[in-house]
Amino acid sequence: MLWARNLLFVALCLLGVALVGREILRQDRISTPQSFAPSRFQVRSVSSSQPTAAAAKPGADSSADPASAARSGRFFSSREPQDWGVVLERFNQEFEEHWKKQGLQKTPTADSFTIARRLSLGLTGTIPSLEEVRALEQVDEQQRVEWYVSRLLEDRRFADYWAERLARVYVGNDMGPFLVFRRRLFVTWLSEHLAENKPYDDLVRQLVSDNGLWNGSPAVNFVTATSDPNRDNQPDEIKLAGKTARAFLGMRIDCLQCHDDKLGTINLGERHNPHGGAQANFHELAAFFGEARVGLTGVQNDNKLKYEYKYLDAEKEELIPAKVPFAQHLVDGHGTRREQLARWITHPENKAFARATVNRVWALMFGRALMEPIDDLPLYGKYPPAMELLADDFIAHGYDLQRMIRLIAASEPFQRDSRADFEITEKHDEQWASFPLSRLRPEQVAGSLVQSASASTINADSHVIAQLVKFFQTREFVERYGDMGQDEFTDRGGTITQRLLMMNGELVKERTGENIVMNAATRMAVLGHSDEAAVEAAYLALFTRYPDGDERSHFAAKLQGKRNQARIAAMEDIYWILVNSTEFSWNH
Image 1 (cartoon, rainbow, N blue to C red):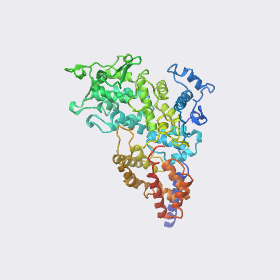
Image 2 (tube, rainbow, N blue to C red):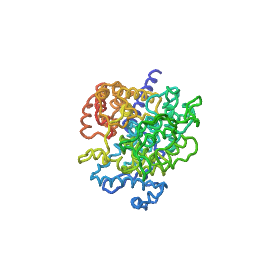
Image 3 (cartoon, rainbow, N blue to C red):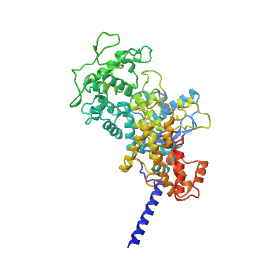
Image 4 (cartoon, one colour):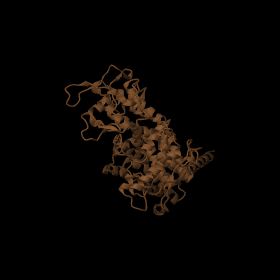
């Protein structure tokens, strides 16, 4: 019977709409992360009345006094792995003492949703989905940070996003010499490594020393990215030396390529016998790559190849020996030159490697490096609070990136608010007494636009069409918005072109316009059980926070009494206004 089939169809449609509405505006069904350990992020006080996140390793002796252990020097007595609570307590204590010396009052602890937003931006390059926010609502307030960190580290978005960010450091952001370079495969390989949380030192050793074809052994793309078409696509030792120093040691020694350091800005040598950088230091580092060659079997080593260079004021080229710029005693002399260099870089006693990693992880999470410039760290000297602590912990725990991320996420500096009931000065931001505000990167803006228009999380579990739409829309938006390339932590102001793109660009139009399937704004207008609920859902989807009383009443009034197309149009306008606010395009 036709009428019965029609009735059944209508009933099924209504049921589907009801279920979708419930998922959008009420709660989600995200499962508990496997690595979620509530005790790790228990909140307690550190040297002040303000709460801070600290934690204890499950099963650890709670009677131990972490602060006294740190003060007595036992923490630094060896490279043995230390209890989570000891490390975090010392981490926070170093900053507390630093702020006291600087005469700075720290800002209050940010609310859990604000911390979740900055975690999502730092770890996945996009804001939390409405689905994730609704799931966070069901988690105990004191456990939300640990819950969300665990979720993000288990989500492939983290591995993919960080792989792209690290690839920019290792091989740049263009497609390079296609004949011998496969950037996409390289990024995928990095992502797999990060997703499995393999030791970071192992990753770096492969980058520096691996052999094979660029499509079969993706790590070799670190070498082939420098291939020079004018030299039969052979690797460029000079580019590799400069990139190695910046990416893995956090040192800018590029200027030594042409001349000695006459200004005393580069300090090499040993701690008790330092010396200024010399031209030889750079080219002796480059000599480690002198035996690398590209042939039919990919990157291989030919020990017959030598590295020669004509120094400034020299009459002719000379044979350059392979020699590291400092800590020569850590070179073991075994294997190929690149293998020796790889082991030297990642040697536990080479603190420059650990410090450089700490500084970059910090920058990815905060939007600003702990010590600036990000790739110009002193070999010896005074470092910011927690840098040496995190470097030692990184080494002691087998170069575990995810452990470092968790420690930073649980720390006092990361959990500071960007607001306070006192004046926040530039010094507060510089010394991490408040969470520093920074403009979102282009891909973060694009990713957040696409995600905010979808109530559900767009990740590897999403439909392939949703993933492809996000990929292509993000790529197109970044190209028009302006990609900063490798210079990713340079502070730049917004441009008129960027503002116009946000106000009138195709992506914004598509993601705030009427579309019951693709856009959350339309569904909120249609499915919201009240005007206030629709406004709340919009704020949670765009800002990861609830609207305050004035915001709620102001925008709810715009919806009041409106039905059908008029209501949809009003909700689209609200979404467009919020997307173009300063709050949307900045971290906080």
